[in-house]
Amino acid sequence: MVLTDEIKTLMLNNDAPIGIGYSGDAAFVISENPAVEYIVPEDGGAIWTDNFAIPKMEQMEHYEYLGRDAVEIYNDLFLEWKLGL
Image (cartoon, rainbow, N blue to C red; front, top):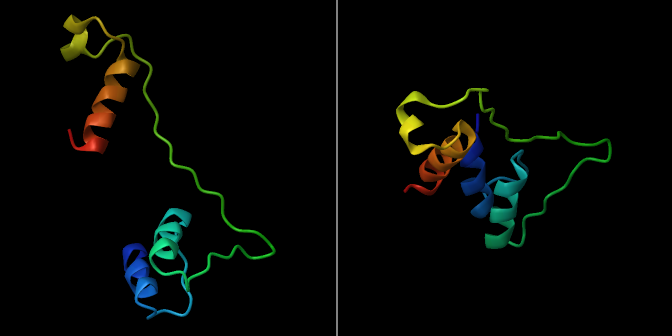
């Protein structure tokens, strides 16, 4: 069994003749190994989206003193986590 991250290494090194992976991973592999092609079958492929939800609330209690709404605070916290700030 090959896990998602493992297929990138195998494809980069030409150790796997075929694999299933995310389009972003395929774009990376293709940029490093032009021998790799990304193909969607004629009968179609999966549609995937990343999503997150923000619960409806007036204020987050421990940030109330900042006078900012929950969406703005959540976005800031998410970006800090994502960017490693």
